[in-house]
Image 1 (tube, rainbow, N blue to C red):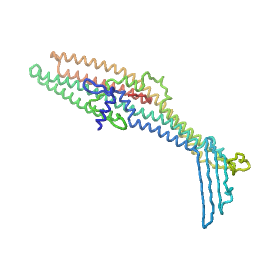
Image 2 (image 1 turned 90 degrees about the vertical axis):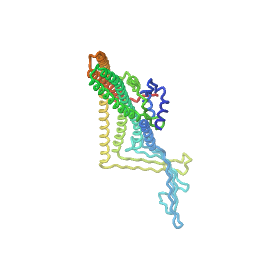
Image 3 (image 1 turned 135 degrees about the vertical axis):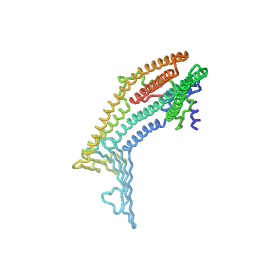
Image 4 (image 1 turned 90 degrees about the horizontal axis):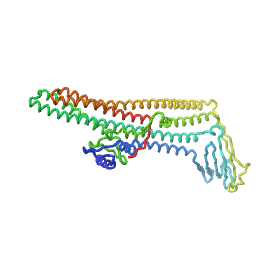
Length: 469
């Protein structure tokens, strides 16, 4: 089933996967990264962070929703109606601790509390309540909504970090796959050379032109090349499985790479463009836009709101309430100041130990977040500078290793000519060849480190690129 999905995937990638002369298919880095960003489950999980933030914001806004409350009590026993009470209230909370309230009250009964006595058709009231001490400039509802807004913005930055991390991991797997593929090509080529050499030495030994022991040495070289090739095949299969971890299509359908699919031979230019590293330097990159720093900034702003709330908790709680009373609410003039219900409530802890302790904890949390932000800024800056230095060095290393491979190739060609004239030995020829193999493997390793340095810089700067298939 997974193989069938894979071939469907190949069709979707055309012309991303191009046929090669060897009937192999190339999975380009651009197309690979595009499908990772589009379909990988971790990327979809990152999108859920935004949904969680939206839900949290919606929940916090609920603190300002109008409320309708209805309280109805009735008691009747032995044919006597003790009481029949109805109290309906409509409340509208606002930002600065002010709450508007409309109320209807209708009570009757033989044993009704005198203070609950109202006209037969009921009593209407409309008024306002306000906190003039604790809760006026900031209260729990206001703080929750502010922090939810900051959390929403923080979640966007955290999502960028998650997407950046998965793209980095996917790139790391792709580059390791590329190195394993290039190493395999090296061993395949030299295995064929060793086989041709063995046959030639064997023929010469049979003709009496070479010592028989030379065939043993040539066979040992052939077997070593075959062993190295077999190890390279296992490594390539394992690396292709690692790449398969990042290839998904459609709605949660994993894909396994097939043996005839190979990586792009030189993705350096595509890596620079796709990871948005072209013409990038520390001078033209704004560290303030780094998602990690933005996330910490919004976290700090949320903690500052929490600190303001705790400072407000040191104030006394003074709640004022005033309500106009009327039997005829349809007549605006019936709301008169001499018909009212009002009150004042005062509450103040004597030692404020709970409030002072909460404020100290809020200050410590805020200070901790500020220190974390300062450290993160320096850490990102130094890590990026180190990676820029590495990239400069790898540019020079690539030039050097290319020249070394070229020189070793010339040495091997010269040794092969001498060997054909009988002026060299199988031992010297194998030595030249081993040196060239090591140089080419080293070149593959340097290429991998160069690409990985680009990917690490991409992760250090937490870039979230736009990648299209």
